Length: 401
Image (cartoon, rainbow, N blue to C red):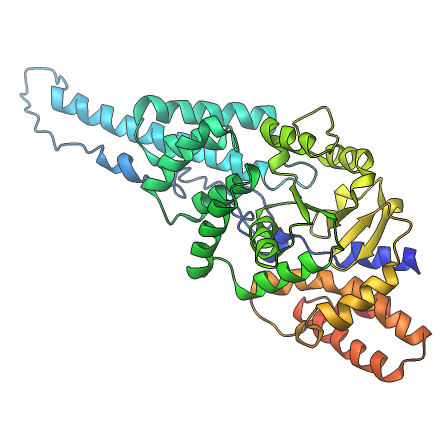
C-alpha cells in the first residue's frame, strides 16, 4: 500500500509554479510554459523604464541647413543621441537582468542561478550602478546578486523605500527576515501582503494544513517563496516553535548555512542548490525528522523515493518507526477542515489542493479495509470534490480503474 500511495503522491503533487505562484513570473517576462518570452520586434517592450530612467529626457533640437554647406550635428543633437543611447542601454540591461533572473527561478532541477546567468546579471547591475546609482534597479539588483547577506541588506532597504509596495521587494524582505530569524520583520511584511490581497485566504489555509502535517519537533523542507512566506507566518501564528522551517532558496546563502550548522544540521559542501544538493542534505540529516513539501518538482524526489512516505501534505524522509496511517487519519479527522477541502477558493490554492489527494486516498483505503462504510462514502465524496477543484479528475479516474 505504501508504494501505491507514493506513486499516487508523485502523480498528484502540485508545484507552486502550476498554481500561478509569485515565482512563476518573477519579473513578468515568462509565458505559461515557464520560458522567457522575447519580443522579436522590441526586446525591451516588457521592461518599461521606471524611476530615474524616465528622468533622462531629450530636448528637441533645432538644426539649420544650407545647400552649400555639409550638415554637422549640433551639441543639442549629440546630447539627444547620447540620451537615447543611455535609455536603450538601461532598457537592455533591465531586460537582461530580469530575464536571466526569471529563467533561473524556472528550473526544475536547481534553485541557484547558473554561472552564465550570474555573469549576465552582474553586468546589468553594474551598468545601473554606473549610470543610475540612485535608482530602484541598482539597489534591488545589487541585493538580488547576494541575497540574504546582511552586508547587502541596506540595498534591499533602499529598494523598499523607493518601491514599498512592489511584491518582489516584499517577498525578499520576508525571506530575509526568515533567513536571519527576524520574525518581527517577516510577520509585519507578510501582514502587509495579506492586507493587500497578495496572499489569499486559500493559501493561508493551505499553509496552516501544511504546518499541521508535520508532527512535533519535525523539520519541514520548503521549495520556494510561495510556501515559505505563508507557512512561516502560520507557524508563528500557531505557536509551533518546535517546528524547524528550512528553505532550499535560503540555503544559497553561506550565512544561512552557518546558522543551520549551529543548530546541528549537516550541510553539503556547496552553496549551489540543485537536486543533488537537496538529496544529499536529506541523507545527511536523517536524525532531524525531515518532512519534504510535496510542492518540490518531481525531479528532486528521483533517487530517494524509497525513503519517502506520504504524510499529510509532505513526504516523511526515512522515518521507519512512524505510524503513517494513524497520522494521516488524525489529520483527516481532527486537524484539517476536511469537508471544506473541495471548495474552490482561488487559482493558486486550488492548484495546490491536489496535494491533499494522497493522504485522502490513503485514508480511504484504510476505511475500506476497516469496513467503515459511512466514513468511506464521505471521504470518497471529498476526494472527488478535491480532484475537481484541483482539475485532477482525469488522474483520479485512472487510479480507480
